[in-house]
Image (cartoon, rainbow, N blue to C red; front, side, top):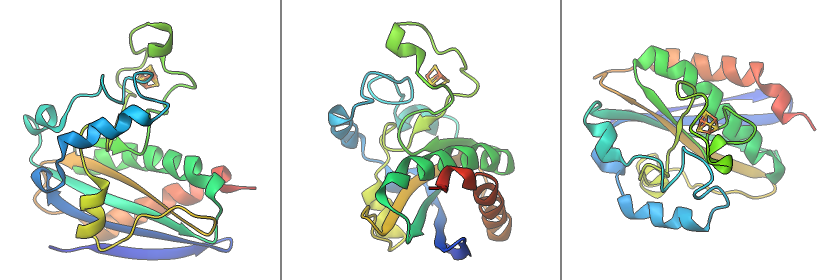
Length: 192
Ligand code: SF4
């Protein structure tokens, strides 16, 4: 199994990327959706349980997932939302390259407020993206596979994402170049 492991510096921050093309099965853990019950987004966003479909649904269409961890050093804990937004923006680009469907960190970020909160159907179904954990994928398993501890503290942040695909091979350079481009484009989210 090959692991993409690269980083770059941007305005004093060390931005890292670790990822690998995996069988969906190796990350599956449907029970993890139970943990979502303690999250403020539970039942309030279509991308999260109990409304998000499970991996069984996606496995009818895809065999693999390119799963990744973004990590950031010298930031501060308030930047998690910014990093999660980066996962969202990055995933939308990556799914074009991998001919797939991306998974994001936390809830869908396409609208300021999900229409589920007012009992209405999703207003942008084509923009909607599901939560990595919410569909029953384990970030703990990914952490072990990539040999990368997922921690959040004042100095260090990490966040997970992925893209379902049927590709048998991926181009690491292309994947990382998109990440670097998106990060620099979205860097406004990281300004103090
Ligand atoms: S696109 Fe908007 S309405 Fe649909 S799941 Fe995402 S946030 Fe909710």
